[in-house]
Image (cartoon, rainbow, N blue to C red):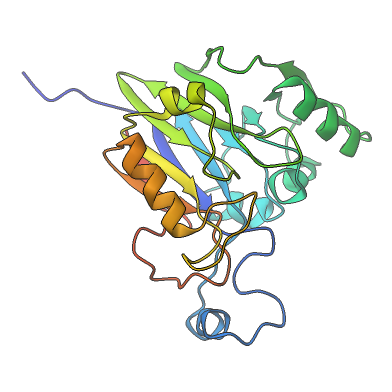
Length: 246
């Protein structure tokens, strides 16, 4: 029998933190090297494609550049993990480009983002955490993470027996239900804001992210939401516009 065929594709549109890399005005080795080499980390978001449809996970401030570089796909749905600027601000880039896509998020996240975009009209879909729902042949599930002080969620995607996880912004103290849902992913993306010697209470550093990965036992994992403190060539670091066929 021929090998089983998987059609879902995930593209990392950005792997940077709220200010991206290079950071404006920064003369650290990572930023100066990025400028010299023409490299960057755009703000973190993902493009998920299946059945000719495209779903965004978060809408970063760099969304215009991200979509152009991804081939200008029509976006059919948006999933929002939390209401911080670097994960939502690009939603207005759909203005005069296409109809604003329907959005999916837990209730408090949706309320906060709707308030931010009070001047836009779009379809709001309230989703209960830990209750999977289907879009374009893929199953999505919002799972709680720990990013105080606001409600924040990771996302689990299931398709044809494969499972993909994304922690979103979080510290390593995840609820047991979330640990269960993220366990054993084929592909896992982890918040890793800082190097191992820097601790920030609402994010993970790379050592904490690595330890969490060991607990979750994914087949493959990558760090995202990285600051300019992490070298572009850091082991395990995701890269903007990496693609994965599942």
